[in-house]
Amino acid sequence: MPHRYTCPDCSISGAVHASRRGAERDQDAHRQTVHGGMSPPSGDRIGYAPPSSRGPVIAIGVFVLLILIRQLTGVAPDDVARWLGLI
Ligand SMILES: [Zn+2]
Image (cartoon, rainbow, N blue to C red; front, side):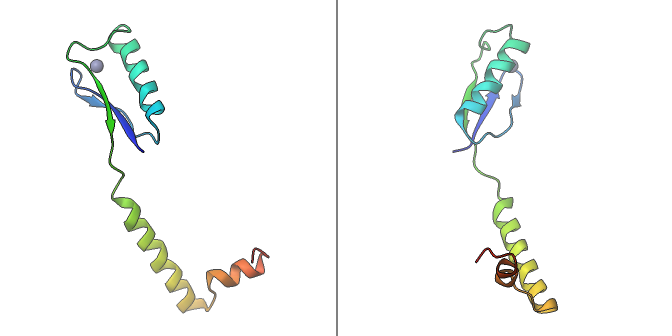
């Protein structure tokens, strides 16, 4: 589940990490470099970060590209997999 570190005192948010541990590393680094190793006066938090909405758009784009390649060349992904000996 993706997590992100946020410091309201500095009005910043860290990168989205696949696990809570990654966001905790951002928290430790931010506290050390900006707040002298202490927690910010207003507190900080690690919360759930919803996944990007670009994922489904990218999947649809790849699917459309595969259909175009199949229509233009007659070569389908399963043909390539057979040629490579994967199936
Ligand atoms: Zn801060």
